[in-house]
Length: 530
Image (tube, rainbow, N blue to C red; front, side):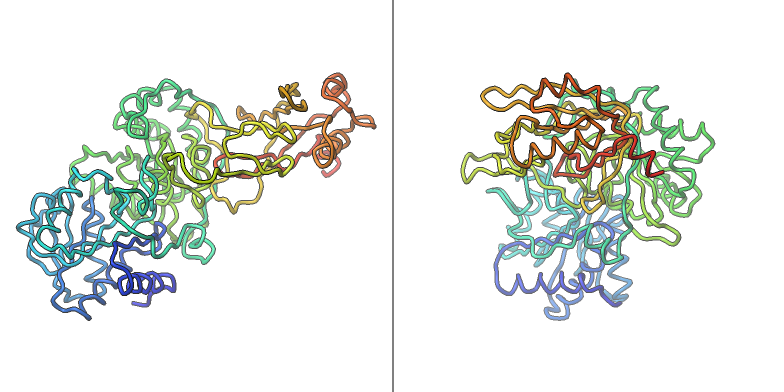
């Protein structure tokens, strides 16, 4: 089988690392770019060079074990391979190439015996602590072979709440040796583009407890699984999904997944649910029917974020708020595979994933502060001054930076761009307010609040400043038909705001985890353009 250029590069990077460094490498390949083939080719190459080598491939779900096994045997039909997985009904512990489910294998290191290379698929799921299934299993394998090599493959090289997989004192992996991300795959034509659309009706999650860096599951489901919100969300899903063939809904719990399924069925669309409680035979049947197009919508309680390959998925409904960047990237990745007749995948971001984590191709791992090193900086989007990353207000122009507010769950989908490469998006403005922004010890400014649905986007104009900030304020005033000369002070601006035409649209673009207003269109300009 012919490898794609990046797949060949990933394998070469891995062997180059092994030839020069003693640690455990990590390969970062976006969902849908063929990790299984990279793994299979690596295994074949290893055994061609070292025929007596023993290789163990560990992962966490039966579908992924079976997928990886089939990829290898499709490439190499006579591979000396076997499967150790209770979920698949196979108990092989002696094969030279052993594909194992960690839940089955973690107590069987002694039966498995000597292993030279441990390959971990979906390596981001390895917990940082040693006293876990993976931790105890690796320790037991190393007791048998202290020279054990470990290589990880993942689409998200970071874990929830603990930073990157290759950083920290307790890290298992030493270095990411190769990265091929979502933006790379879309650019090169190997992945489907992602788009997001919607409006914003919000449900407050501020009372939902957090534990281990994410929302407590039971409390989250109680907050999200509200009949009125579910009905409104499903109305939105059906409205956007009528012309799309294959929908996935990531829900906030088992009950929520069933309720979403029932609401979709009540509107005349076929739907099924898969949860951790679904019996294996029924789960396989449902997934096969979904892939074959016999089921329009598949709801789940986030059990299908990894190890699930359905290229036809062209709509993802995000109904599960999360603070986990890995969960976000993995879930969205279910829609990035190519399929005949599929032009893109629409992500309905009810859960505010993009607002929480930023565009999916620019997600950063959250790092715990260590109190050392040089302080980070950011650029003020209003006057382009460099300020400390923790600053809430720009010292030069008075711009008040956006910080994450109370998490919201939306009954209608957020329209924030899901890719950082997306063009700035024009949003209709339904309301506008000018407010006096008092800056103690500095120069005051005018805060402008634009209502776009129920989302409020903010910008600052600075009539009392000098240079670029003042020019920007004067331009806004002139654009909106205000009598010149423009106001020289904040209070004068507020006193004369009646001179200004309404703003019809604003243009916003992603800026890290937030969004900045980069353009305005007054109402009269819209009429003249028509």
